Image (cartoon, rainbow, N blue to C red; front, side, top):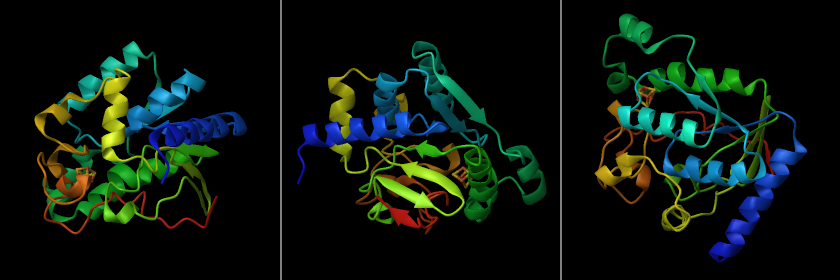
Length: 225
Ligand code: SF4
């Protein structure tokens, strides 16, 4: 098993490769601890790396404030992506609690569709996904190829939750204040609970439902490196 210094070295090499080898690169940031960790490292290579955030309309106020703070402090080259059908339009058509009755449809419209549209103009997208976040990410690989989509690069794929937190604390990286309120994993407000709900840190997401992924990361890769 790799020690943390080795993992960090491989993470930096992966980022350097992705950022220097490809022309159209962007980093997906939810402003949770994992994507901000990757962003902190990516900025060492390219301080103006393109960053994108999907705006579902259901985000936490705290995440919004944290995003604004980091955007200013880190001078982020941030694009905020809105879905073609807004949360309000979706609610008007399907009712206010669609996220509870049919979270698959809600995520499809507000998260997956705008992400796929945004990815059409990229060669590579960089994420903060880790393989031990949930049972659905166990087989996640560092670099994944997809049919008709850009290469997905997951530089901290093998970091543990503890390693992420140690890195954040040791390096004074700002983090979303919701973690201090007991949230283990952050997403949209109506679908995210604070506290420990199971073995995996994402257990508080879509709690009580089978769904544990928005759908963007359940698309099967065609190849890996
Ligand atoms: S996480 Fe919840 S509120 Fe956000 S898009 Fe998915 S179902 Fe809708």
